[in-house]
Amino acid sequence: MIDFIINGKAGSGKSLRAKNKLIQLLEQKNIEYKIHLTEYQKHATQIAKDLCANGATTIVAVGGDGTVNEVLNGIDLNVNFGIIPLGSGNDFVTSAKIPTDVEAALDIVLTQTAKPTDFLVCDGIRGLNVIGTGIDVEILERCSTYKLLKGKLQYFVSLVVSLFKFNFYNCKIKRDGELKDTSAMIICCCNGGEFGGGIPICPDSNVADGQMEFIYVTKMNKAKMVSYLIKLMQGKILEQEFCHRVKQDEVQVVFDNPISIQIDGEIYRGIKFDIHIEKGKLKLFRP
Figure 1 (cartoon, rainbow, N blue to C red):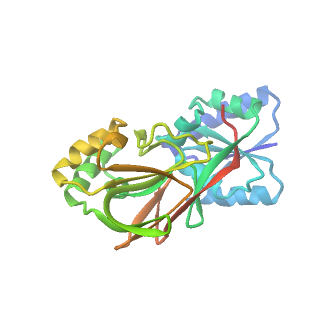
Figure 2: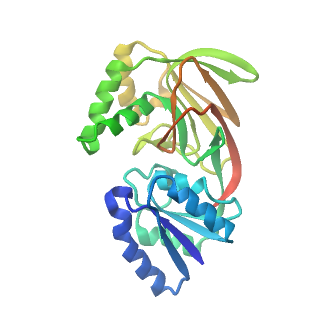
């Protein structure tokens, strides 16, 4: 039995439109399955918990990075986990090399063995892809307030406003038992390599190498921020002098002021920036 958890709102309704195709493919192959539709935010987490409590062995998230994150936070780690990516961003699957075509992604679930895969944990909340804070999070938060704008225009307007209003984050980074004072534009931990709908923050990340990439971009002249963000969009951020990259199993950062943290694109407030890697503990269907 394979349980599919579908977010009907992912990818502007693309998940629901794909449901009939998914059913057709499963019935053609005589696969025993059940489909569960989410009805509200975090519902996928509760569905996954209930399924695991009732003995589910294989659970597949159908939707975008947010749906994948919700299901990840509800499953037991002895369950085989699959992804059929149908969101607007699909950042994690780029690093995991999972195709965005429904039939091809389903074929991996049906024919492959689930492989040990790393994931991150931030103050008790799991993340598969990237966890962080900084100007990218402020842009995401502003996008949610500009509801009359859509798509790239919404992101562009949010980016411009954020550039004008951004104040660097003063914080203390704990490394090797010592606290280091810094001011940063972006602070994140990466398992996957992209965030924000295809922005390559750490293109060579490997989801199964047992290593967490800790990346932080320190304070610079504000006049350089636009060119710096362009480098980020081009996947060249790691080459810049203000960017620091360290491989660590765990990271703690203490901020002078309250911050928001994004976990796989989902915004969390009131949690600590206390992140560690769980090495190979997720059983994920991937090539």
